[in-house]
Image (cartoon, rainbow, N blue to C red):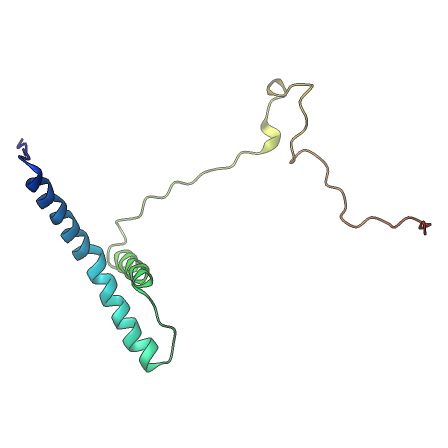
Length: 121
């Protein structure tokens, strides 16, 4: 295993510059390309909406995920399914007698009630 030793402040600046350059190549350059492509094809030619660099980054991310899903379907994105339990499964031992009922347990009153038969003037 190789260990990197940074000697001086200039070495740290070089590493930070390398990280900024890598980030620019991976995120900013494709985002700018997608922005220019969209604005040339949609905004100028079809009189559609113009997009900014942030929207170009979102468009690039969407296209990258779509291409990944189409050409590499075996590499799935990890999603975790969460099952919501039924509220009636709670045991009575967890509830205390003096606690107030929660909002889910209280009955819902009708929004429109009948007006009183006589109105005071």
